[in-house]
Image (cartoon, rainbow, N blue to C red; front, top):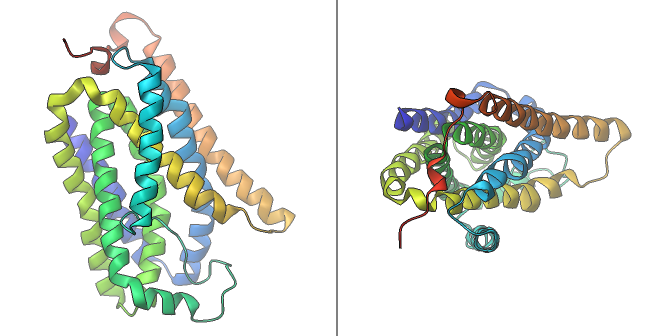
Length: 278
């Protein structure tokens, strides 16, 4: 059943968002991306700081010092992947109010349409592995982690779809290639399930890696997009969607904690609480 949840979550994150992008017009996509970037910023930060990291640090199988070191290594790892253009997660596209000259985005995309697909495939694969690790740690952790990834994947895939159109791909080709790229999340999820299962004791570290991915994407990519001069009305809207993301995750976490606190049968004993015997 755990594998089924992993496949379902990776399909929703990798493919459903591509279909949504293809179903809408470019101007409407630009408007949606603008609001979803704010929403996914709140969701990613809320998931990492309010749920995944606390769950990892509450486990008894790893010391806080080693988990903080893992967080640092994770942040540097994703930084280097992006440096190598293997972990693309930008949302830059026409109609995004970045005020470049007309055709700038099409010119940039024309030189990098295929690199977008390669980078997006690697990003999706990593997301699949992170979803698998989260579900193996605890189904409820997996649920919240998947929600965060799906919330981020929608604006990412929408942006990638527009970039591919600007690069000269037809709408059909952009949809097909983007969907194939999205399926790499399913591959990552299945491989993660197979490879991680024998290493249950190290799941706290994998959860921290997942959190480092969320924090890096939010801080290095999304927040800089939000840091621009806006009218007070647009600023309020931006903050509203960011707050919606945070409140949504905080509410889910509170519900999970209340459910765990209903005594005996409803609680669970995470597999991550047992350290390997030495």
